[in-house]
Amino acid sequence: MSLKIALLTNYPFVDNVEWKRAFVAACLDKGYDVEAHYGKRDFKSMFFSFLKKRKYNSKLVKKVNSKSVKNVPFFNSLGVTVFQHKNVNFSPAIEKIKSKKYDIIVTALDQILSKNFLNEIDSRVVNVHYGVLPEIKGLSAIEWTYFKYKKCEATLHYINKGIDTGSIIQKKGIEIVKLFSFENLRKEIQSKIPEMLFNFISKIENGDEIKEIDNKGGKLYTFMHPDLLSILIKSNKQ
Amino acid sequence: MKLYSLFTDWFVIRWLEYLKFNVKSDNYHIDITLNVLDMYNKNGAMVKEFNIFGSRSKTLYLKSTGYYIKNKHENKKKQLYNIDLEKCLYKEQSNNNYFNSTVYLTEKVKAGGTSFNKSIKVLKKDSEASQHIELLFLITKFRLELATEVFVVNFILNNLSKDIEVFVGENAFEQRKNYGSSHEFGYWLNYILDFNGLCNNIKLKNAIYSYFEELHLIFVKRKMFYHDVVGKDKSLINVSGVILIAKAFFRHSLITKDFRFANAGMFLIDFVKQLQINSKGFIQNTFPIHKGNSRYKFPSWTINYFLEVLILKKQVLNEFKNCLIN
Image (cartoon, rainbow over all chains, first blue to last red; front, side, top):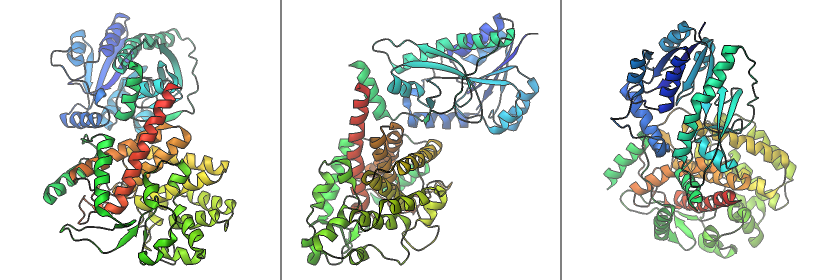
């Protein structure tokens, strides 16, 4: 029996992140049953999320190029069912996702999953964190990881009720070249995500043991202030 | 101009969560802050306030680095103060000396030979002092060897163990229970850091670290400290409290080299920078206000603290750079 996998993400009208397309296409190639669930489908939540990101870290706000490949039409063209919700934490979305009985839910969200969601959903819910765990939890993880450890690492972990506190499944170091940019590091991490996920999925499929690493401790970070960020960027250019 | 300011301040506070602050460089804000301070300086003291019609209050406040004390007999007592408080504010000193809020009281007692109890009457308005004023007295007593370290540590630990929301409400200048704000709370944070610099108590150090961790968590969740610090009513913002909490965050970062706190402090003062730009160098709404409008401009308290915070931020950025090199 093939595995049932769901991609849980936000902003159906603008989502154009490449790794999601690569992941879904590869899932289909491998014969998995994959579906996509989108939250924040309405313009209002999209607009206010945009403003918040713009306020705290303008680098995170990508220009939505009208000519770029959008993920929802791409998924539709592959025959992948796409569900759109007002918010993935709201009851209708939770009920829908619960009824599908997915084996694995891969998240790419800019929000915390509610306790209700995690209590109700009986699937393995995983996420890729763009920083070193357990040390650096929260936002701007690439920048804080570089500041603290001069390295770049992506971490696949389970999601639990805390922020990036679920046990660690896999770590992947990213090589840092001279004169890098944080945007490029982000892209580099994203290019490794499908590979990390398939390592994990194949273990589940084969019934292999998954060694979980404890994710206790560490500190919670938030958006890095532009003044600190500019020092980091300048230091890289020198 | 006032109407424009009323509108922009209201807009800034109403849309605080979403508005990208149009802040300028720290040096720009230091310059306009010093310009405003020059307008209000008066022989080592400061004019308390101007109202919207431009008339000055006759009240003068002596300036110190950490606390403002109403000076009823300024001319008579002026000769008692051997330290140049004006210079204290701008001169670079070690962390402890620079920020020690009790320097003023202690020097006053030492220079004048006045008894402790007599001198603190200037501060103590009510029979029941708030916790942060109580702590200020205790630290001064400790510096004058009138109180033991253990006694002060226990007093602080007892208060740190309280729920932050409850503590903020209780710790009020006025004898109105549950009327305390982030203004008094900001003082409290800076005083515990003052005392932490004076003694070397591991238990206190750990307790302070956990306390700041809890505060940082509040910042991560809300990205701002409102009037009641943890309350839900976003229409109430105490700007001086925001500045004092940012100051405490910067100081804590400099001590611990944990820049998460400084990062939070920088976001907090961006909000104040925005208000300052709207008010031609002043910072309006420095008392607990409702929906962002206050009749008075208070140069003496908030602007001084803001200047301290901007100077501290320079130190923090420098330290951040050093950590990156090393």
